[in-house]
Length: 543
Image (tube, rainbow, N blue to C red; front, side):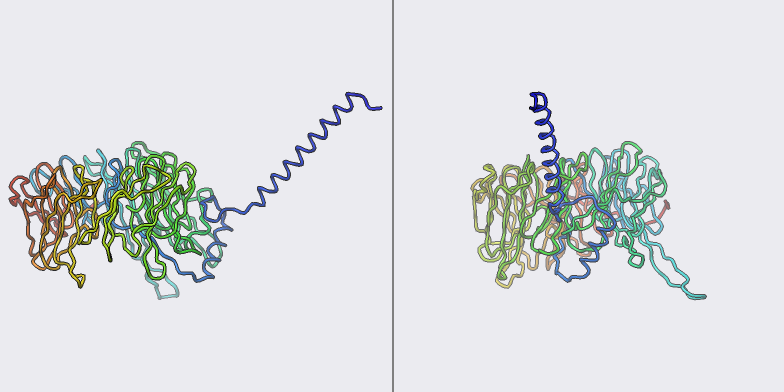
């Protein structure tokens, strides 16, 4: 007869066996669970080759969400541009050259000319000039005796120059790659390059992108740094997200992504990349990374496409997205509120059916957007209740609003006035109450075929204190328009350019500086008297 001790031992054995058996079952269930094909995850060479092969065998149409010319989106985040300034100098890139302008004397202090390097954007720190662009080298390969095949090698190149003596502090060159975009904050430089040459089709192998770093020599992306979104759209390029510490000399952090192509955006908390889906081209996926660690947080997918980088933004623990898509040849617009902690859609709202969104701004718990086609309404949306997006105000307007911002506790807008044939007859500036959308003031520039630079890129308009300054063109001439905008809209000055066109405007040291493709124009900010026209095309020093 079994003793009490024997019974206890037998029970323990049974419990251990059951625990082991349950563990096996749980493990099998987890292993059998299919992987999420949208989620970005570490990948293998086999998975990438299979991804490329699978996507090449099919012919699904895709909608590419490409970044527009972005404006500065956050106060503590700078984005690359062709024109920057500090306390002493203006820095202007032009073809294969950087012009450094003495602001006080209004003279060209120095010009740095590069061989085979075309800077496309620049950024500044207190001690450095950062140039990002493309270097092209003409080469040839002997294919048979006496016969050469010419080709061009393209590299994405980054120069980091010392501000004091313009010496090269660091140089990076990414072979067979092109520059996409960059962002800078107090932590360092974030940038994206893309490489189309990442598959050896003949030998069926991955070509890991390599680059040269003047501090560390030739470096190469490795298999541990490759990530794949298997449902991402089939644009055959490998996107490499890089982080460079500008305060200390450290190796470049890099991550390679496949299946992620679209608009990128960065703020003080997150880095976000968008993509369409291969099998559902009317779905946009927003992949979210922590900015501090660049660790992948996850993704959220929404129906529709983004009109530009202003169509999504974060506030506190929420992500707000505005999308558009077509159904029965009619545009459909949706606004989403997304919980960033759980990455779930907690509310959404259809808005402005059959209208097209032209301008959009998210600000804290509100969104301001304008549409155009039939009714042409302006909207204020309220996200105060995260589970229910509410239309706080709505107003019909009789012009095409193409720019929105908040100014002096009002909504400021600007856009073209169109006739019944959709021809522009002028430019309308308006102020609205941000709560009721009641009109506060408006002003119209009546000129035939009038157009505004801000329609194409947001930096065509600046706001400095009470001033609103923007570049425009019309049948009469191109011009820079200066307004005082507070509780009313008051025209101050119209500066005409009969043979030139202004692409950037800045207010520096009580002077208005206007940049064209050929000249810098300096004006006194109190009288708007022209102080000097400075061409910037002479050559002095090669780097």
